[in-house]
Length: 93
Image: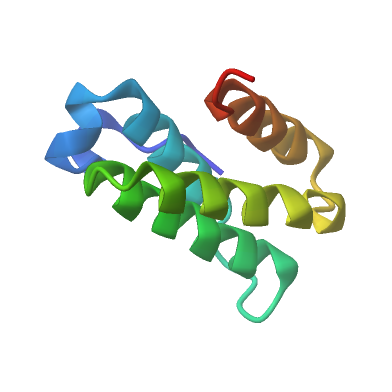
């Protein structure tokens, strides 16, 4: 699926690279209603909402829930990009 253009992004995506990355991943997960792919998309959409709402615990919870669905994503390239994003968003130990 084509990467969303800058004009397709919401204003907050243009200013925050994490939000922009979430938007890109959500866009790439479009379709497949009622599948693990759609549930993963919902978790990333919720994470975006909590990130913008300054709710870090809820943000991390949705990222953890999303990570649990990764093995069910058949597109290995997309799975890898999401895995990398999730790894980069983990708080320091």
